[in-house]
Length: 324
Image (cartoon, rainbow, N blue to C red; front, side, top):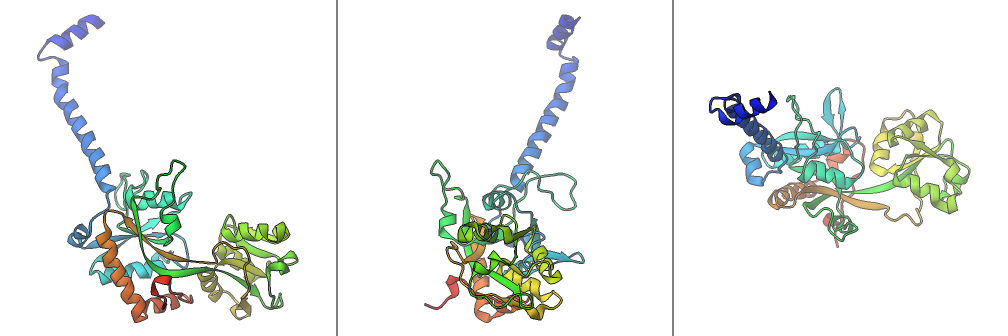
């Protein structure tokens, strides 16, 4: 029976196989079209395409105050406000592209700048497809990182153009002045506890300082915000983290007036400060040049400083805007 059926399918022009062929071809065409749609949706857009669409997609990190977060369903934060200023400066409507941090920044750049993530969901569409943003905020403006190579000597982020430094970020340390006297160096944390975000640079730094003598007094939290809550509640007397996060977080604490900034040296800390910038796909540098024009105007006019002041954060200019 199997051989007879096979012979019939192969030889009869009006057989089942012949009748199924148009449907099979249609299915294959639909599948190919879907694959092309997935590929096309992952492509970054040129400046001309963005202007023609009248909208720009800007990627910001989700749940990352004071840079980008939500209050009562509304997007707020330093980077959110900057994204709005960029869109307005270019005469475009803004589409916020929310990011969740991956294992490292290289993955974030791949997923949101030049390739897309296979699990990226487009809002209001049931299907999953790849998507990238037109520009990504809060990336290090650092030549060493930009030209980092893999074990085979290939540049890891060669498909990304880094540009537009808009902020100088610092590491900082705050303490409760009612629980600690002013101090001159980190040695005090041989006896006092200090909170840090787990697996952050302050965590590694303090845990290894003074040949590990501070390690037992380094208390870990899943975020700097939670460490500041512990400071407010009196369970720890100090917190180390990014200065802008500390400044923003302290403004919302009860008894904020007793929280002071420790102006002390951080010996052997590789980088106490670094410039924060943006990234686009390498082939779309015209967009980067236009965005840089907008950022230049924001800095020179004082609007950037005012934007940061909304969140209680002291604005520090990156090297690009510092006088020689």
